[in-house]
Image: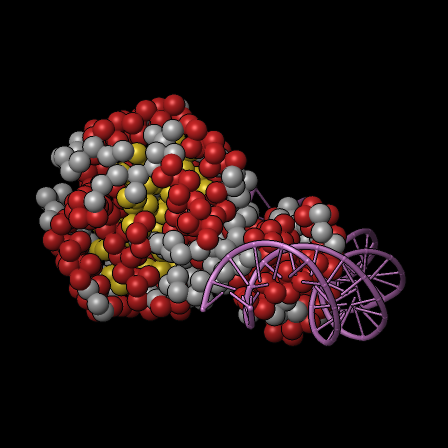
Length: 239
Length: 239
DNA sequence: TTCTTCTTCCCCCGAAATAGGGAGGCACCG
DNA sequence: CGGTGCCTCCCTATTTCGGGGGAAGAAGAA
């Protein structure tokens, strides 16, 4: 642990990877380069884990998913609200479910020290890059301090790849809304009623409805709420 | 342009900064270190720019805000849907509003080359770290290739500071929605009517309404559409 | 020039959402 | 054990939204 790492080499290979298996291999390589027990990248999603690669035992990954730990894992919960990389010690382990999870994790070969970097992409995408090890606190503090920048970059590059592998997340489905349509949807999105929006824009409510309808049509939305959700997801409007 | 940059020194000073003025000074220092025309970090928000620091002329910043370019700036629109750092040349400059914007920007001393890194934090926070310069394409391509990693790290550290300065974005401020509330809002966001949502969740429409109301209350939303917009912006639901 | 898109305005009516009440059961935490 | 939050169900009104029409001028693109 604590070696000098060939960051450039790893990032280049990461960039050149075209398969999930390739990512998996790189996690192993990163683990060895850093001299730690485990490296894990995983995409966190309400629909369950879409991508994950890392050096944890399969049995633990399996168990993790089966137990629905995605919803209770204190690492995920804690990282979700943070931007900084997070040392596991600073998380909230006081709840009952967290204690159960911790005991279970340690029993499956997960190390007692962890450092997780939250990463976010477009449309609410969220992922974690984690390095895990079994050692004393001092040693770990030194390691994380020495390598935090390399880990941030690595997290970034891993997520870049994961987003490439996920075609739905691409920017290709770009619609264009007219200025008035954007105005209308934006005001609706901040809670105005149609009447308020019409008044704000100084147009009749009927006219407003035409904008909403045409926006709905362009976005392929089933109703106003759907149109606003799509416009937000696509970044066409911002709230 | 293209010098060897004292990344460690800059990042350490960035870490030690406690004021917005300090951030502003660092943008100037980074600009000089990289030998480029401009460095800008800004937080993007519908409420207008909350934080921004950089080396653009005040007159341009003023003009930018007055013209409402936050809504039409192709850099923002383009970056919002991407994770990769973006070279401005790869953006869509074909629309009328984009051409107007470009002309206006060049007239205000903005360079013809740009490289912007999108950054995202908790609760839908979104910011951009941009480096801008006036030069030929080849020179620029070489620069961005040589410095992309440094720029990513710098973007990360700038955003870290901005989040520190914004108390509302702290981890404790986050709303939590119950699983049923998330289900309800998610289904509404994909266009289901209340009746369809109730059926999908196998609950009565009345029960569903209670979820929507409590979610609305938690999110401080004025109506269902607003609640969904907020939940999406905050990353509480994903569509 | 012609054609499309954007902008603005108007009608009616049925369907859907909202607002305001209330009530019981279950699980967890201190 | 009592509080809190979550899940479930029910009522009645009123307001708002959605879909069905149609129409006209202005601006920009082909």
